Image (cartoon, rainbow over all chains, first blue to last red):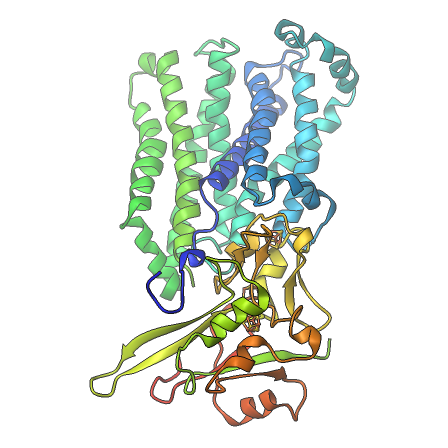
Length: 313
Length: 190
Ligand code: SF4
Ligand code: SF4
Ligand code: SF4
């Protein structure tokens, strides 16, 4: 404190830190994984066996959102008052709408997980849950549809949450929810393949797995396009918004963007496509590509959150 | 809601002495390390020997269209009967959405209550007793004027009708209720 008006610490424009970035990542990952799992089931002809990808999604969906919510709650200044947010709703607030969606999405995700993994439960010593899974199975179709719709909501919501603030030019744009939804899809696909390969021992030449991989390129292209749109919007808005583009060339977040998002997140998966098919389809290569995809999405959430908050109108 | 409390800060009269800052702390019991109000001395501007400073009051702008109220999930941040933007301490969970959303960056977490806090025009303290806000009362140069702008005879209404004034960041559509009378030498900026 060396100016006469006092301490400046409370005026730091970066309010939400990495814990929130992890929450945004987890929520997007959960939604993306569920969307891909259910989407592929609808698309596939075989509706009787649970594919390893759907099983992976049935685990990732509820686990990721629960971890994300734990981050959110412990980041509150009053974590033990979190119930206050569950009983008071301001319907103008994006966060309140998100809480409502998550309040239905999370238990439904768990219920759906039980249905899909009903044959696995006894193997994992969770046999006592089997009757619950049996009971829920009759509701499968309804749960699946509602869960899918809510997953779209949750995936986009993470973007709406931070785009609803007109203080920050980089966050206050309409593409953010779309960008977060697609990057959630790519994280979901990556995580699904990791879990399917490691936990459900799926063969790396599996048909479903390659079908999911075929999705990855268009998803990534859309993601790149949305990012490009975001930066163009800032450029053409000019003034304080255009100043925010400096985050691409200066400071630690520029590094996170070019190395994390572009290099690891887009570069590694794209370059891997140049590998001979035999190498590309080995388990090791697939895991590496999936992990770099996940790293890229995590880096993107950090970049957007920190760089976004660093520039204020 | 037919009251429209506003505050006018005359940057010509202000000398940046921080008497308002100190008075606000003691009136509202603001804990160490955080503050509801600062008057930042910016500058010097211009060419020597005609240098001048700008006195920039940083406090809640009491936005008529307040982003902090819109984003608060629980309704802890709300607009009272009197139009003043305040916080219900026990409804605040400390999600910091309002802190992030405030374009003027004047919200903070009170280290004692763990709820968010900011200037509320001394609503619970001096206004409740029918007195003027602490910062207004204590200002040695009478740079601050406070009152109901809907009252045509009020001092603030007269002041706003006779002198040029500006508000910060009006392009964001928040309709701040802190008006500033610019230094003659300083020109208008926001
Ligand atoms: S200045 Fe900030 S804290 Fe005050 S009413 Fe406006 S948005 Fe809310
Ligand atoms: S920190 Fe408190 S007042 Fe601010 S938005 Fe969250 S609950 Fe509302
Ligand atoms: S009106 Fe009251 S709370 Fe607001 S700055 Fe002045 S003294 Fe502080």
